[in-house]
Length: 300
Image (cartoon, rainbow, N blue to C red):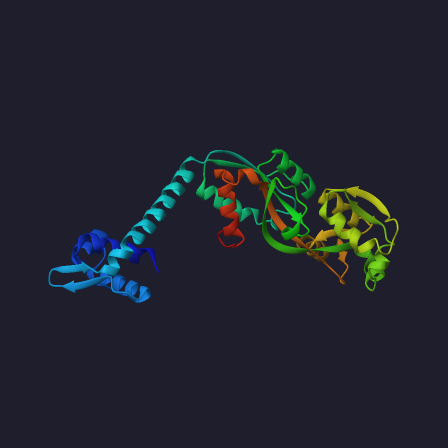
């Protein structure tokens, strides 16, 4: 069922005549007839009886007319609200990024927001997942992206709403010179290697601990960081192993900076977080709608 069919139905019901309805809708009379016929076939009832005096609405048509008018009214209200948001949504939005903007599809997100809300200023501070969780919770930023180990069953603070965008994977990366040394290693072997480690609240830390703790009572930590740039530099320089998302790991391996251990990977979710009590905020609604389009998610 199409909206234009409902518009035609209501116009014919109000005008009682195909020609007048066609003139009102700025379409041809055969198009009006085709719209009505298609709608009747889909609904399985006759909406009008045709006579020399025009189009007489049937009992079934009378029963369905209020529903069609209500549907068109809802669509009109939706479009009006969208126009209002587009024209009036101003101010600033601070959306924290936890990783490479390309992985997060930031360019397309910004294109959509600029087109729909040209007066809205969007700030994109760079941070890490664990800090973003706390900053969103505290209201320091409006929203942010984060890696979440199990989005459907996470331990995120109850104040936060989690929008699951996609799944990716985390991979063990090593200095490029370690390729031969690690090519046949298992988790038990990796547990004896030095690691560039994560801070306590980073989701990657708990994922790694589950894998390594059965094989080692104490993990050798050459450094602890929550910043991906530091991790990349230290791993590439030969300090130890690290954990990195798939896209960044592949890019660094192609450039010869790291080696990706090929025997396992750890699944993780890419999520957008905001405070649950801001679900109705026009800015948050605009960002969520743009994210649904960017990541091809269903409306909910």
